[in-house]
Image: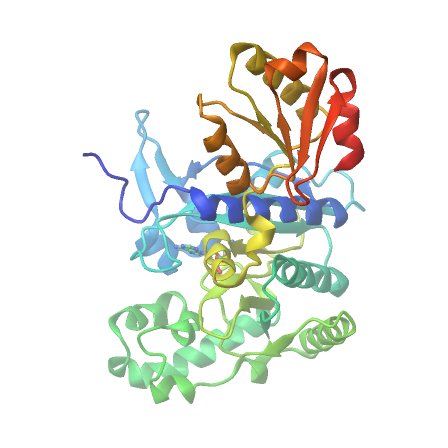
Length: 416
Ligand code: HAM
């Protein structure tokens, strides 16, 4: 038997239902917040991720799916969504109108060669938003609160935003230099990866899973000592906006994020335990670094599989359970012809309708209708049909009524 590749999964059953429910909520949010959908390719030139996510990051050094295509090009399956969106914004010159906000979202599969475990896959789905052309802290507040509100409205009310600021480019450079000075004398007390990170990305040492309880990390200089006054003002303003929006957040200086492109605010969405349901930040230099114009950006991405996992523990079953408005029962050929026609008419009138599509006995059809929590049963039988009548049963009160065949659709529309 050929089985699925390690770290992948087949979306089905309850997970698929929750996933549809999440997607539905996302679509509503995106309409109300006025974001436009964008789809970029699943694979991109390898160089794109080196220049955005960063050469020294775990994602690029250890986790990408890289291959040469038949034309000998270096190709990588996207490990995240921001790089492709930024590439597309530049390539399609989406920044044409200088006062327009560019507000984009995606909901797509990503690929990272990670060690599979609960909530960690090699193919996974991210819903993400990216906003370009505004450096206003108001947008920071909009974007952070959007993710928080979405998670809340999905049913995850205990979500907390863990918030930090990395300051502007100068604050980040000064801080990186201070970290290098601080860690150099302790280099041999750090894990193998962190010994490399000193040269490639010293900030990431603070985020190390292996060294996280090491006192050397705990006593390291804090980013707050290096933040410029301007960045501090931005951050204070952001906090007051978030207070006003009643967003539950907590300042956490250990949030430095695993990707290189961030400056100013960064954040993660967390539940009480440690997995991040999502994360993001501002990236004011990224578009320019990739060859585009000076165009500030900010965004976040949520891990859909992790949200499904959390919702499964607590979702209101009723919300996602099987249900249909009407189940149409038929046995004879004549009844079946009526059944499929009435079903079509009801479905085209937005009535969720199911028919006996498997030659079931009447008894089995009653059972199936109950399993589907059908609100009404349409019980067809030849005798009634010859008189132009159809039996409708309210499956909750169990009351039955005979309805004129010609008005059956209107009758159902009137009662549901
Ligand atoms: P990230 O923190 O690498 O950020 O990923 C965002 C979210 O994707 C994580 O918090 C997690 O929920 C989910 N995720 C990541 N890896 C896996 C995995 N192997 N299996 C399941 N879920 C996973 C980014 O990717 C940035 N592009 C976010 C962003 C957008 N920043 C600015 N704009």
